[in-house]
Length: 432
Image 1 (cartoon, rainbow, N blue to C red):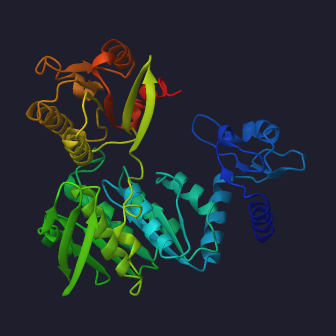
Image 2 (cartoon, helix red, strand yellow; image 1 turned 90 degrees about the vertical axis):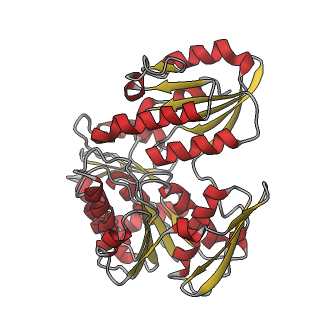
Image 3 (cartoon, rainbow, N blue to C red; image 1 turned 120 degrees about the horizontal axis):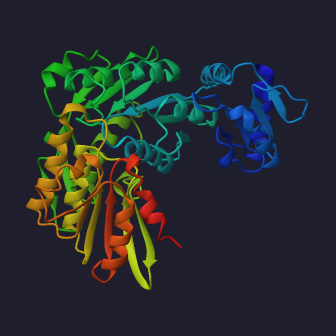
């Protein structure tokens, strides 16, 4: 393993190579590892990796090509390689989980450290399952002082598998909502599984933002973990339309935070601030108060054209939970922009509560009197007859025809829903 590790690290150092599992993502001098799944075996694509000029190809197929490295089991190789990397790493590992905001918090923590000249690495995009975690570990910057990873679970026992792989030193739970509850017995079962992030053998300290049943959750925590309620900390927010300010007291100390991004980001700011203070006591937060630290990590604005008309998509097509969808609809509805339209995809993995939460979103649209709104997905479609003033489609494709016919009345389009609805394809249809 030491010899292979040295080969890989030399390539990463010389060519800035990335380790990838998908031949479609290979750039020149990258390192490809073929993964075997139920339906396919990535090792079969070694020729394609070689043609794309990968610097090294690690597969379970023996071949005499000089760039090819044979291993009997690529999954076992990855598991051992990740352990080797983490055992070699001298910095501290930070893990972030929660029902919503994992990527946003991870990115904010990274930027706060970076703005204070502290070397840090963060995991790739929203790759937060076991395969995504392994991918990010293998691409770590071993010279960084801190490495930040997000962990996501959809099933019981997943968190323990992630934690046993990563063994983080500092852990943050951003909040726990009824999203992805479908595979858990009930809400408390979901909470119990989220809190297993604190089972790390190397845990130094942790923080949980939790607004429900604090006495129940407090009994589940050890002395290394603090419980906060960010809503209580926001009681004294002062705003003047452009700037939101908050003064709050925590552990008998006064703090001040401001942001032009709005009240939603004050919540992110407070939790990020208190979490980082747990392991960096003397950090200077002067840059923390600027908006480059309080970033929107995944929602993005895409300016493009439909025909000859310029339009803007507000793209949140990557994921949705009852909490995040509700919150983002409210935020967008208050924005001072004209000719709005909404394309909302259904939410997955809500189990027996699916109808309740989808009905809540439709009722919110009714209450806000949203005019041009499309609901996409079977979970929304079942309410078509009851709410006939809205448009319902089973999939994303009819929405494209709708936009083409209504474009004279639309300028700003909000798009959000679970990834399985493929709402991103609506936006890609028009990006030039």
